[in-house]
Amino acid sequence: MTAKTKKLGHSPRKARTKILSAQEAANRLHSAQRRGERVVFTNGCFDLLHVGHVRSLEEARGFGDVLVVGVNSDASVRSLDKGSERPFVPARQRAELLAGLECVDCVIIFGGSTPLSLIKKIRPDVLAKGGDWSLDGIVGAKEVMSWGGRVKRLREIPGLRTSLLAQKVKASH
Image (cartoon, rainbow, N blue to C red):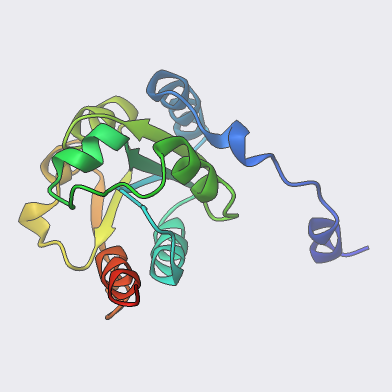
C-alpha cells in the first residue's frame, strides 16, 4: 500500500476540533514551532465561502507547515462597514466551514476590528494576506517582520469577492 493510498483511507479530523481559542492555539502553535514547523496566519470575514477563498487559503498553506485562519466575529464584521445585513453566516458556522478545508489546520474567531492582538499572541512565521492589500496596509506586518517572520501577499482573483456575490444575489430578487 502506497503513502498516497493510505492517505485516501484516513479518517479526517472533525472540523469542529480545529476551532480553538486564541490561548489553545498559541500553545499548540508554539509547540509546532519548537519542532521546526512554520506557522502561517491569514484572516478575514469569509462570510460567503467561495473558490477565491479556497485558492487563497491553499496558496497561504504553501508558505508553511501549519495554516491558521483568524475569522472575524459577528460584531467585528458589523464594525467593518460591510453593510447592515452582514454577516450573512454566523461566525461559528463560518469557522466550521473553513475548518472543514484540508488546507486549514486551525481556526480562531477573534473580536475587534483587527487581528493584531491575535497575531502577537500566536507569533506566526508567515503572515499572508490578499493581494488587494498593500504591504503597509497589512495589519501585523511590522510585528511579524520584527521577530524575523515574512509577509506574503496572496494572488488576487478578479471578480471573486463576497461583496460582488451579495450584489448579484440582491439584484436577482
